[in-house]
Image (cartoon, rainbow, N blue to C red):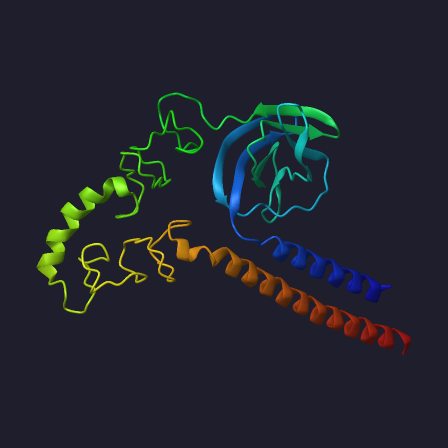
Length: 284
C-alpha cells in the first residue's frame, strides 16, 4: 500500500514538472491581471495592462473561475482557479483575502472580465486599457492608448515609423525621425575618437563609423540593415535578419521539452525501482 502511494506521488510530480515546462513557449502578447478577492465574495481589479511575456501555466481546479468574453458575451478564455486565503508562512496565517495574478494570451476581441464562484458571478469589469485622462499611466502605452501616450512621450514602447515624430523610447538610430539628432550628437565624438583606427570605440557606432563598427556588431546602435547578420543591439522586429530568431526559440523550446520528457522517464524508472524494492522488503 505504501509503495503505491510513493509511486503515485512520483507520477504526480513528474506530470506536473512536464506540464510546467511545456508552457515555456516563446513570448507573446499577454493580458496581465492583478486582483484581490475577499472571502465575502467581493473583488477588486488592482492592475491591468498588456505585456510581452509568457502566459501563466494553469491547472484547472478550485471553486472560482475566471472568464473573459467579447462584446457578444462569447467566452474567449475560461479557467478554474484555486484560491488560498492564507499567508503561506510557517505556520500559515489565515486571512480574509487572496491575491491573484494572471497572464493570459491576449486577443483584440477581449472586452470583459468575469469572476465566478461555484457558477455565480461575484465580479465583472470591462477591459479598459485606456482611460483618456491625458496622462500616460503605467498600464498604458502608445499601442493601447495613443490619446494618453502620444509618440513624443516615453511609454516603454519604441515606434520606429517615419512619421515625423522622434520617439524617445527608441535606441539611437532606430527611429528615422531621430536621425538628425543622432548625427549631431554622435559624429563629433566619433571624430574625436579617431574613426578608422580599426577599433569600435565607445564613442563610435555603425552610424558614425561603419569601418570600425561593422553591421551586426554590438555598439549600442541598431542598424536594421538586411545583410544576413542579426544585430544584437536591435529590439524585437527591428532587424529583418533576426526574423529567424523565433524559429530558433521554438527549436530551443522543443529541445527543452524533450529533455524534460527524458528526465521524466528517468524519474519514472526510479519510482518503479523504489516500488519494487519496497514490495520485496514487505514480503520478507
